[in-house]
Length: 226
Image (tube, rainbow, N blue to C red; front, side, top):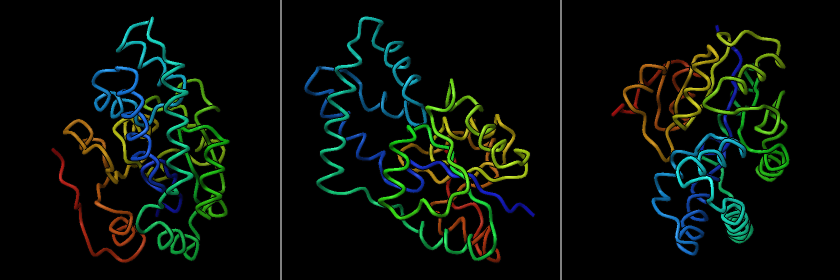
């Protein structure tokens, strides 16, 4: 029986991705950056360096990425400070259940450690996690498997001995390539047929996942694959 779970953070535990989408859209409008919605979805799960590379590939090597990044970062923190960052539905209930039943819990997030600790502390979630692995600890984050392999190494387990909980296509690809059993809780992007073939389970919420894998099974796959 698998008793280790490694979570993504953004879009799984806390709702930062919707704030990021708003911030990027406002910056793109101000700077005249085209097709930002598709770009936003393509960058979900990437770390800072890979996000920059994605932008330069799409918009050209002369694209002023630093100006866009700085404008978007300011807007993100303005929104976060004004409105707060919401915790995803079912997080506290699931964490309490996992702790009660003796699960080991880790985190593999493409965000920087400073950002992860800040958000997790504000959400009162940090105490649940045995290991934090972040995007600034690896050369290439998701969809490459490095971040999940490092998380498993730090927890002293084989990848196949843990569930990875992801919301993004890049995150699923990363965890699957690492050899983990992947659960998807889609946020901004639904799974494709390619992604569906990689999944052990796909659920509409963390609560539905918990009902099936943590509590006695009561629900099956509830997230349709397109």
